Amino acid sequence: METVTGRENLLKRFLLVYGYLSLVLFGTLSVGLFFHMPAFDKGGVLNWTVWDDMSDHAPLMITVIYFVWSIFLIRSSRNPRAYASFLDFTMWANLAHGLIMIPQGIGHENVSLQVHDGHSMGPHPRWSHRLSADLAWNLR
Image (cartoon, rainbow, N blue to C red):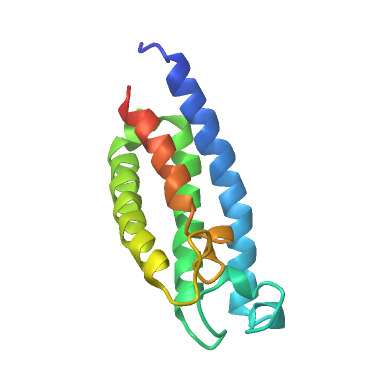
């Protein structure tokens, strides 16, 4: 039987908590987008969480992907070693995403260094959190 290290226990807890928080966040966003709630429309109080007008299909597709990703984060919390490939993919995919988004955010005409159309408060910073968890996993 394999012993579980302190780092692995910490990673398990992080993946579990982060997975459930993400599940609630992206489940809520997905339902709101699916039902075209006015709060997500341009000028709505939650519009900062989406990329475009409600009629656009991209926000719902992306939030559903993050919802499913959250489920796999929860599943991987039980046995991170069994999900090493998923965690490695998560790390590299989100690193690539972040490397693309940083110059786009900096070069955007309506953007300060802190906010890309409001996304510093929305889903985009997720890559840095997942990256941190995955880097911790890779330090095993």
